[in-house]
Image (cartoon, rainbow, N blue to C red):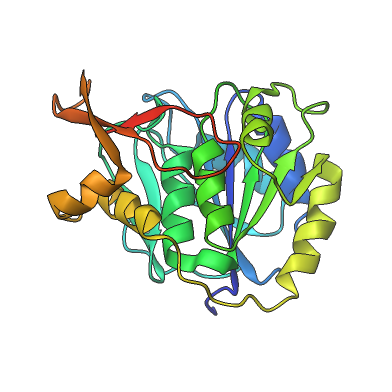
Length: 254
């Protein structure tokens, strides 16, 4: 099975099962892309819970993402509960680092790693959900030359996540679920022009993969705060990098 031309990353939370079922039903069986899905689940959720709910709605093969698996086109990789899903070069990386945006797996973690690795070959999609996970990840995708798509908040069962993205950046498409398949099919027929992702995105992605990063590089991301990480007890950094002129998201990372 061939490597994909595009990487399609999808994030959702509350109301996500119904949204994902419709979303994947509109994906073409011959799409030249690999699909990665992060949905917020309880840390005790059964890992294949989503597979049972998604597979009947698509001819594409759905599977739980496994560490070091080669990325192949036509596969839908689903994040397991309580494990970060990332990509590096042409394979999958799983991580048990601290929660990001209150979640593990985190949408932002997946999106940033995709942007850092595949830059203009990434299509980012944010669907229904609460709070703002996915916003800075979509900014990373946009800054790296990728395409951003948001579910129309008027259609979303829980519009907070789509609205957070829309309030903080200019997206390429804000459309109902039924329109996404045609848009993604058209994008997948194009040839992306490789770009160099911004250095801060690469640094954050490497931190999430638990790759050793020089302290001086970490300082480029923001200022050290007075707060401690609730997971590991280490210091938290307030990310102050100006990612978008409209950006208002205040966030911290370990």
